Image (cartoon, rainbow, N blue to C red; front, side):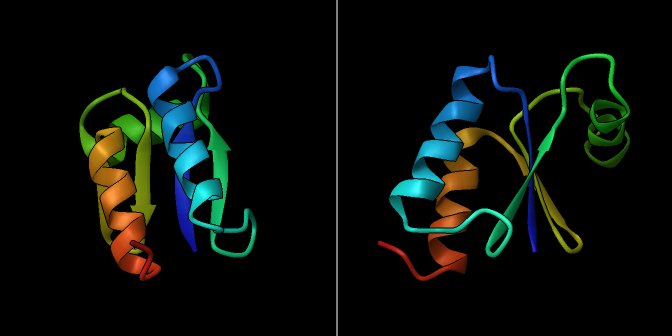
Length: 82
């Protein structure tokens, strides 16, 4: 399952969440949202995996990425959405 590390006050994170919903993806079926607010263990995991403490951050198995536009394109390709 795709993990999306997000912070709800981040406009780029909201962009990713809205795009996933617009694609018809279902939370807890297609993806899981992990809240990664500053100072949390989840945010530390983002930094450990990717080297930067920034969100949004996608993890899908051994693949990970930053940048909302890249994440949205990845989701479109993975779930065959256009």
